[in-house]
Image (cartoon, rainbow, N blue to C red; front, side):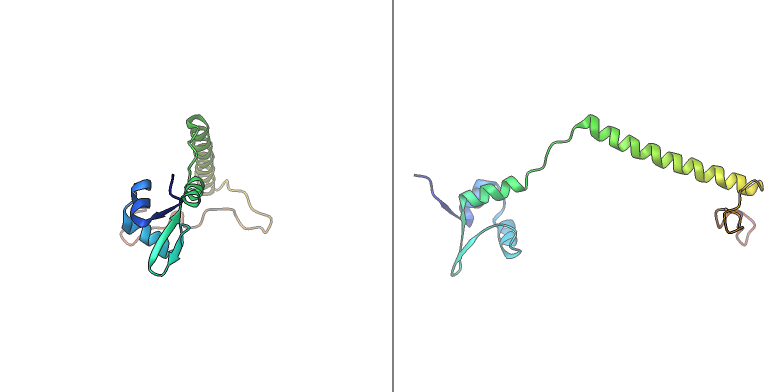
Length: 117
């Protein structure tokens, strides 16, 4: 006959987790438990259901690589656009916005005290 309730020692062995980690999870109410005075017990079915919720799906390497590369391409385009805009601003080819002010990146060509850029 299989036990329905497990002690902290039994659950520690069952899950392969240190007892101190289980006590911390109980204190933070992260794991379902029962308290009888000072005795802490765990219902095996509830712990199994809790562990299923903690399950992390495997990654599809190809899809993850495509997602990362798509973000990298977008970032690269933004950097290229900012550089092009900065160069046009320095060459005086920058366009003006609807409010009549030039659309330039602030802080370009500011020199520090020793004369370097």
